[in-house]
View (cartoon, helix red, strand yellow):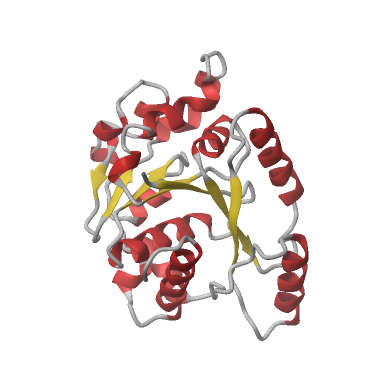
Length: 257
């Protein structure tokens, strides 16, 4: 049975989608079958994996709201062993549509149950908010990865996220744990970066990945070409970082590299 990991931080611009796309691609390239479920209305994970959102009949919205079977909404990407359940703009209104639905927090979990055995890992790219869609992601996940940028307001709002995770653990998903905290936009030459790293390690002891994701032009360019960075420029610092992260992730999960 596949492991489900939510990539979540309610703060935008922290490298959440970049990490979801590139970690997924790196694991796929290592021979693991991976599904990326895009539940962010912006749909950047979908386009970042080279899938055209406009030409699709089914999406994560169809699964969450329309009762569409998960397998019907999954599409293959051009990248090795990587599939995606694409997002659509309709998700922007899904929060309101879920309000009166029974067991609204479990819609995604129940839908993914039918495909969980088909993949080694399922990643959920959650929206930058703590609404009902993210709640669905946390209820469906076994663990979560929290990307944090190495900047001044890095820890701002994280107490709210941790509080939400505790509530989800108490009420809906007693097994959810933090898989790891990922430091992004890292610049080792800045004193501020080192201060942020120390503070994050203090707040999340033994949970911070040893791999840091650097600021990298190639990482920023790759999505506009619909490519993960390892396919856009395999020799870039960003590609090497996500390859290292995939190795670290696999080691922590007792899988071969």
